[in-house]
Length: 264
Image (cartoon, helix red, strand yellow):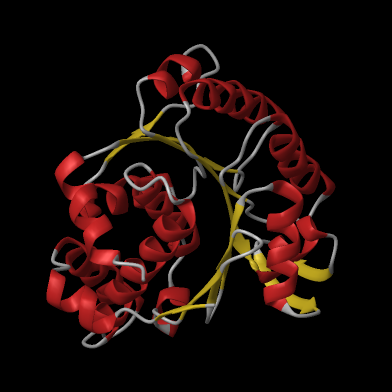
């Protein structure tokens, strides 16, 4: 049984430092969502400091949304430092399958360092797993095959927890699988919720070493806040403003009564 609130409570108590090398489009949102949940964000990309910053952090989040070859080199340096310290590394495989650079860079990261959680939409995870998938920019347009089996296949190959996000999130370590039905369609109306989800996963993994449980709890809490924010939202603008507030005000009653996790 996954107790999502217990992990959230520990996150708020410990206030872990979460190091990001992330998407320039959504960097502000990623920092804010981490802070709203109670963790401490730091956005440090320079190759000259990433090893040192990873060395004092509690988790590392790598997001290839606005990648360059130089940034990937920094990610590998930070990842190796995180591996030495044995802190969790989360990779958000944004846009994998859209271009050769993105796909090759994600594979280079996965092969070059220990990645504990790989997060992506159905097409991104499908491409990494070797399935037939279609990506348009950073959006999933189609996946051929059973999403659960495809996610499990990638988890088995990489020995990582895989989080395939969508209307129903699939979280698996290759053996155990959790389905998360929390969330609201309004979350897709603003740019950045995918990137924010990866940052939240990193925050939860910083305090819970069972990364399957941590990732599942993170996506449940994230989705619950989205459901609550959508209730009175007039559109994307009011939704986004309310979303941060709902994250900040998540309490035991809300989390325990609204969590929709199915453990298989």
